[in-house]
Length: 340
Image 1 (tube, rainbow, N blue to C red):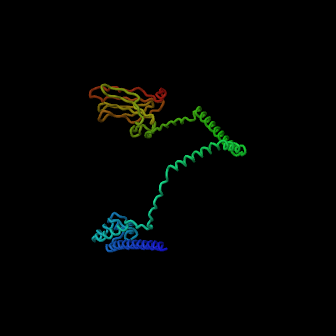
Image 2: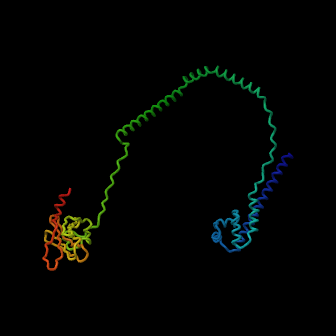
Image 3: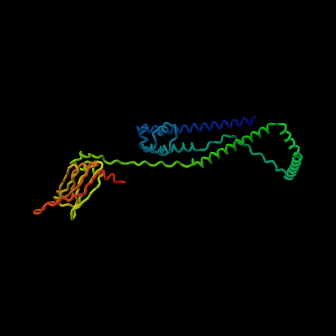
């Protein structure tokens, strides 16, 4: 009884000491938090301003200043310097609290009794002898009991129908699984022979035709208009050509979108004339005023009509007028019929 009472007294003393240490640590923590709070109030800075002036969040400052969480050492020093006070006392207080927080807790378990002395090791010779005797006895018993056991098992199998039913169920299950495998193999073979496993052929990419600028006029509506301004030059082609020595070139230009034509001369002298005519008797002309080329306004070019272009050199003083030189006639319907 006296021993048990002394142990309880020791445990009680340890609990009191541990509670005292926690109270001291709590007081120091409150003292540190109180100092931080006093500095914050003296500076007049809000938690948001403390966050701006330091690299710590305002929510962290709120927990540190109110004693909810132990602050980092750098934060304590930053607050002291921000408030213009000596950080030494605060850091000393922080070191004391940190040392108390990181110190190992006292062992509260009762002193353990010394381990009892180990039992002396038994003599191995008798153990080996007993092991060999037991092995021989077990071998004899197993050899003698083999035949009766087998006979008993066969008799039990004949008397009880449960194992037979289980064997039949296992057999039927195996046959069903085999039938499923054969059926799956047949389906795969048929799909392979019919080509169903081949990936589908890629769909042809549709050809997107980009439409050019719309024609500004067609047929007689184009009479006398500029082929460039009417967008007739977008699909225009030179369908007939001619020349006047030494350099002048005559071109008959045709636009299928506008169903109109015009004449053009190049490498010409100033004063040279270009003329375009159709089978309806309409005509358009122009003269080279500068540079060395010029083109006529538009003239209607119906499918079954004909158009042609002519050119004439400028008249020289004292010289006779020269006859114009013309291209061959162009009939749009005949040209379309000859296309492959």
